[in-house]
Length: 164
Image (cartoon, rainbow, N blue to C red):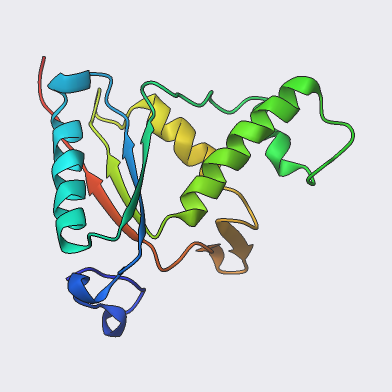
């Protein structure tokens, strides 16, 4: 079963879902071919494609294309689009954030490789989460707290941990 909503009544069999799905595979391990989480995401995507051959797959390798961590420049996405007072650096960082959040919002299915280093996810995965977490686009604040705006997605997290 794949849970596709916030209530049990919204759970459906995977074979009934996503005939023409857009799947985003995200790897964040720095270990390349030695990465267990990369092996897991590859197996999950292969299984998904076998069940849903029309799936369009996009790939994002955060170890290779690492978004910078939040900074004064990267917080430009918090300002209105086209704000005239954005510096060149803010405009460049805003373009990175826009590309990442657009890619996230376009995906129906996300397969995320999340290894654990020093008891936490890689910093490049955290930077990606920071970039796609945008008020008014992927969540909103309410009197009861934050509420997601990107519902209806299937998210599969492949996590691995080990020793050196």
